[in-house]
Length: 200
Image 1 (tube, rainbow, N blue to C red):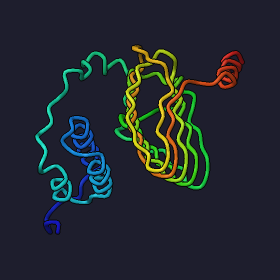
Image 2: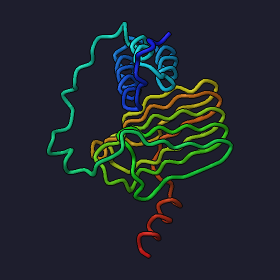
Image 3: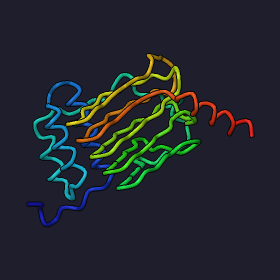
Image 4: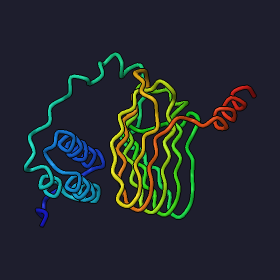
């Protein structure tokens, strides 16, 4: 039970814990099932003690050597810490110059979500996609650096992109059940449609 004098946590506090859990999962310290369970608890936590329990058995995370320089960060517009995309029993698309957050979280329940990253003016984007009985498509530009990891129970988590090493660096984590998450390049008809919009 939370201490009676605890202040409620913020979205930034929850995000920091999810990041630690994701790092721990990537390092093999916790299993995928543990990551999913703890992430769900972190996203609904209200007090610091609840968050502390989720990382009590993990080492304190250290900044990665790949963290962008101050000069690089200044070159990008200020972004919100978290951007939510939600579809429930419906379909939606975000495209064009939409503004992602430092972390973009997509929740799709019995619906469809398309996230088009081809026109983003950012050097990096971090996407966490949860799909239950639905589908999530993430369209990425040719030549971008893609870091995709996912698991779908009774479904599929597929990356059909060709390897690239350019910008943006798109990191995607996709999880869910009875649905599908696909990371892909644009299809021919989508490229033609985009080109027509650029010509007008």
